Amino acid sequence: MPNTVTDVKNSAYWENGQYLYEWDRERGDRYTEAAEKAQEVRWKRLMANRPPRDVLPRKLLPGPDRKPPLYHYGFPFTRTYALDYVCHRHLPVDIPEEDREEFGGRSVLDMAELTDEWLAANEDMQVFAMSISSFLMVKDLSRKCHFGLNHGRPFSLEWDGIVSLWTNYNFDERYAYCPDDEKVIKTIKDALAEVEGRRSLKAQWWFDWDNDVGLFHLQ
Image (cartoon, rainbow, N blue to C red; front, side, top):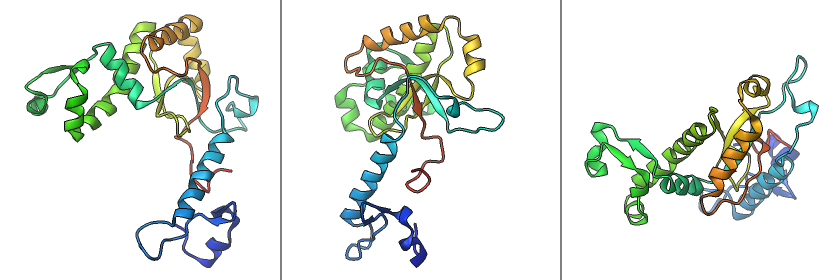
């Protein structure tokens, strides 16, 4: 956190006339409400400047003299959608022996058994369900389209993850191993569309959080 006179005078630490790290001196444990709102405005502006793209321009493709930021190509999703997907598909997950008591003695859990009541009553179970769902979903989609898919995290407040076919850094290698890109994309779209709550069925290039992301690192 900036804490010098030089920091305060630096325009990078301001947004629309508001100092981003203005401390709440009365509470002493948080930023002022105005600073928090300004930080949110800054994040949204940074994200708006990096929208998803249908096609990447040459400057965003790596080369001998270029090291662009990381972009993933694929379908974004929310944690809630991923959980709905694995429940709809009745996807199984092996439970380690030392954790089985927590799961009612189950050695294998059908994700559809995770009812709203069970999740609401156990915060640890909520964390488990949300963390494992995206992994299981991507694994299932990989099996369906016969092509190993990966995860990414779009630079967005709306989405929590992305089913990634490739990145701008491994496109050539990954595309060469893809059996049929149009068929793979259609298989993923069809599988995702079967579950209610799907709002985006278009594969695009997304700027990823796994870049040097920060309120002051980007413009």
